[in-house]
Amino acid sequence: MYLSRVEINKQRIETKRALMSPQIMHASIKACFPKSDGRILWRADTLGHNLYILIAAPIKPDFTDFIRQYGWPASGQTGESGDYGQLLDRITQDSVWRFRLTANPVHTVKGKIYAHVTAAHQRNWLLDRAECNGFVLQGDALDVVRRDTIRFHKGRGTERREVTLARASFEGVLTVRDAALFKNALTQGIGRARAYGCGLLTVARLL
Image (cartoon, rainbow, N blue to C red):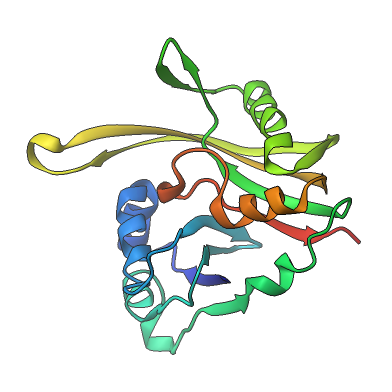
């Protein structure tokens, strides 16, 4: 398992188009893994003034074409990949971590799926899912740092339809209660719309 990232040029038209249509970005990311059949999780992350695509996948991505589309190909730019297994080996019961997650909080009413659109409901959505994913949240250290809703089209011809995606980005502190369940959340994601940049949970050791 590898955790990889590559900076993208947010001034390029291609980048702006892909960020507004996760279907396009999803296809471009999949193309970085022509031989992988495992789960690929990704999200767009802002670090300082820079914008990155962060990816967790079973193998290392080949960013060559991706950089040609969305980066600075003339600069000799490359992406970065690290062995995710080293972090997973450090996950133990009662360990405490800072985390970041962009998710698609939804609920079901009479068989129909509806998005949570308020920060309070989105926050409660994550609190409700903590236990089944092997962790507990420190409630006073859980923030919804960004919320947005985007609309894009999926499919072609008669299969073409509009998709509405409500996203919430969370940051906070968690404590691991079940290491196996938590590792599964890190490698398989949390919630829906994982192909569209949601569900990737990342952690850093709390100092």
